[in-house]
Image 1 (cartoon, rainbow, N blue to C red):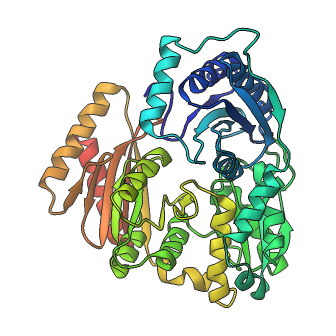
Image 2 (tube, rainbow, N blue to C red):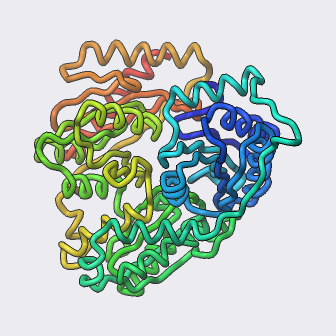
Length: 453
């Protein structure tokens, strides 16, 4: 696809992403969906209202009435779409910096659109092919109130509130000035927790920290947890579809570790887990221990959603899916990522671990992960380097996987090489319970890649 990537479309606002492009995407989506009404929502970014207005205009121009939801977290959009039976044009750039914005398209089931539907919408944009209407049939707008309240109520009803409340937890919440500022603190209070906050005022400039919840951006949350004797910290990205945790000592919990802990709690024999090809050995081991299958997809939420839907149609139970970046799906709840719900499920684990986050994750921490970047000059050099990697993979004594790049599984360790989708780099990943082995696997693959220069 030329426009839509693995999780919508994103770019620097008013350079790559323009009001004209958003208008066309909305017109194309409105022309493709069999819907009289379409919702429009946004996160807290400073250009959000501008692009939401463009989206609403595009939908009205093809005869669709518009439900304006305002600033709401992405999972609240999913809840509204599912309950009201309407699709949505969502203006968000998720975890990207404040100068970015983007578009996600959500179906009337509350789930991001599948690849085939996105391709149909993209084709309309590229061909300039939209429905036509006139002044008599142009769409109208309605402002919808209570979307966040309804979302919070259904989430609280979907988890074990009694167990969480009985644990007497103190939770530090860092929404990163994003859309969760209007929802997550309230949700955890209503789950019976004492809640402390940092970066919890909605502000699209992201003044307290960058939007992505990675360790270097979570120093304030770590400090708050450590100095306040909180039991756990929970951080979100800009649209609140991810959750990253800080344990009671103030240490950031690796997303692969929390994913493995949540999966171990959710899985039963015969289940399947869907994850991206850079999946951690932690999850591999959890699946083996629970007699569950692991299904690997290319990196990106859209690919994980598509494969999970396929397995569901085949009658396979998928209780959990996702990636090690804090973006976890619980398909029986909803096939979309929900940062506040992920956090609540983690609080359920703490309730069973005497409130100690470090104890809840302890079985999944003894792994070592290595990432190496190898830069290239142009497309020819890129292809030569990938060819060298392929030749190395073909002679290796390990099980290969070519879902996205080349991954070698050694049973208790793995190495992956794949081109970056955003930078002129070949990425090499390796993981093992033995630090020296992880370094060695990464170095062997890096040497193979560089031999193609």
